[in-house]
Length: 373
Image (cartoon, rainbow, N blue to C red; front, side):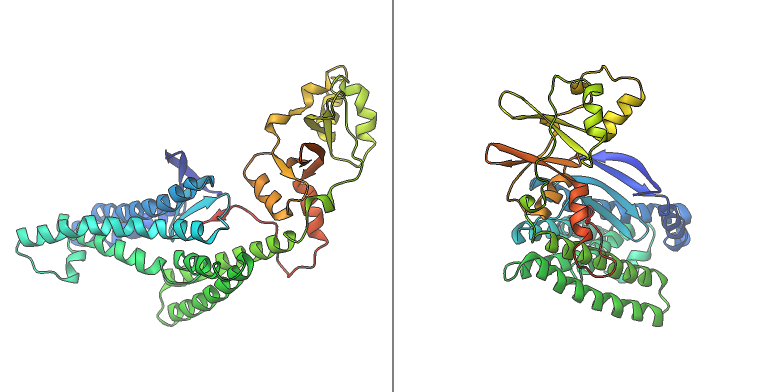
């Protein structure tokens, strides 16, 4: 995410802070400082966002447990975002990932509760909501206890893409397919966001309006992505794979294959073992053109070849949405297609995009991107 600074790494996940986070830090310093001054207010704000970070780590660790890569966690003025490469399609897995975040806050609340009660008894202070605004250890712990409870309650509202909305989609997934479940969850989330936004405007609550706008836009975005995947799911790799692709021999030089490569509309060229037809790797017209431009025509073709162990593999009858997820998990934009043990060709992200261009779609639909949670 642009305008973000990396501040650390936890469990192999980059932790980032968006530059706009400084605004909420300044706002919190004066809003929560009270008689204790802005430094105390800043401490309270940082403590709140520590809870948010732990919440997002709960989602992320659960996702990694299912083999889903987590790009990073970014703290924003409105909360935190964990960017997952994908969301699990199995309802049980999505349910666990969605609940993991609020569960962290429940555990933290259970830890804080006896501490708050103990301090109240020790200082002979009765419970009052005003305790949360009082500077000091008791006031801070009481405030964090309330913050954890608030995070659980708000996030579990069944409005997609909040955690409760994802739980709602996961529950629907037991009775219908993933794409229809997403459509229903997004519709409910939009209704909630509209109502929340209207309430925020009437009550003049600026931050609440921003949150409502985020829920509406983020839910709509993911709904469009799911709709796109649903359409791609109707196509198999074999239906879009090019017929009789040009393959290259590994013993050739760049100069020898350049006329064939540069004269073809094909973008990716498999390099095959001439003895058994097995894939050794692939090269592209761009790499060959760059090598020729640099006067490296005598260079072996294998020097500009991506070796086979770096190439993801998909089945000939795999669905295009599955291929898209496979490519999203690797830095490669090309996958090798096999029918059993027989190599059938290469499929690229560009091939899927060309298919998508010819599909009837609603206005604004886009190719899927990494999920945010």
